Image (tube, rainbow, N blue to C red; front, side):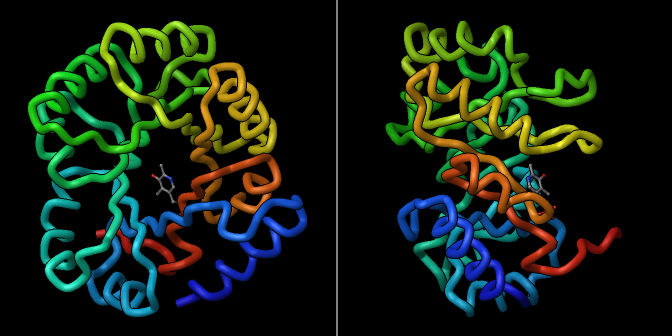
Length: 218
Ligand SMILES: *Cc1c(COP(=O)(O)O)cnc(C)c1O
């Protein structure tokens, strides 16, 4: 378990970028990890976790929350409209708002519940056909639609760069688009590239395998 080492690398990255200590949220991505590993990371004091499936998270987290009531859970995978309600019951943040139909449904269910998670709009900066996320050309329009038509408070932007491209180009682009839209939150950087994301202003990094070890395929 190398949570301490990751925290150390984050501190160094923030210092190098002249950013304040603790100016970042480390999301420990626990998807597919066995409960024993998750329990160990909880035991070491980590409280912010990321999952990419509503169903998997629903099975895992209510139990842990009985012992750790201050867990902060982030959804970082695609969200189907028929899962919005359970997602809102479970998650404190959703990083994958990416289409008007989903934004509308979120708006309706948030009104009904009277409780809003932190919301990030996922951007498909690489314009990859198989990847979810709003295309860069549609982003500004989508954000104003979220704000004006759906009354959804948007906290920031999220990106998963293309696997075969230099991630820092995509991080810089995301930062530019966030600034242009008056958004403070930047969810970017994973195990292999979080230091470069910190240098480019990430506020939320999503680190899985570097904390938990390789994900076991079942
Ligand atoms: C799995 C996942 C991560 C974590 O990936 P690692 O390379 O294990 O750090 C981060 N973000 C998203 C959206 C993921 O699905």
